[in-house]
Image (cartoon, helix red, strand yellow):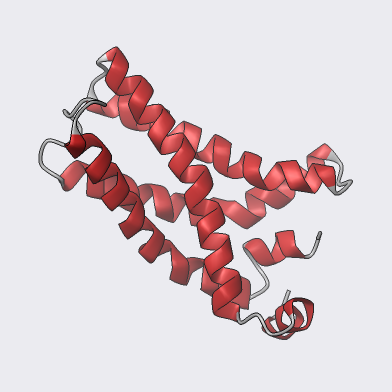
Length: 156
């Protein structure tokens, strides 16, 4: 979907507003997965690597799920909904996860903090905020070229 098609479909909404919406969508799915994964891993006393693997797997799962569900609700067949979600969300989720996990890894003590520690929640919130800022231009670039969430908006 081109920038002009987005402008026609969304009226006065700017490309930035659509990219903001897409990035918030990505943050929601990734955030749910990251938080759930790190809470589970921390509670079970896992080491850093398996903790991050679980968090990333769940971030992708929830990120894709938040796209697939409304597509299925709109009548898209499952295979097409999955393909659309993969095409729309993969790069955005990859960027968000790389940045999010890199930030968490560089915050001293963040991966050792338990769920009852302010450092655990503060570093996670900080990492997700930085990841949001890093992912916004990626989503804007994708949408401007008819990719990313522009593919999903075409089904609404």
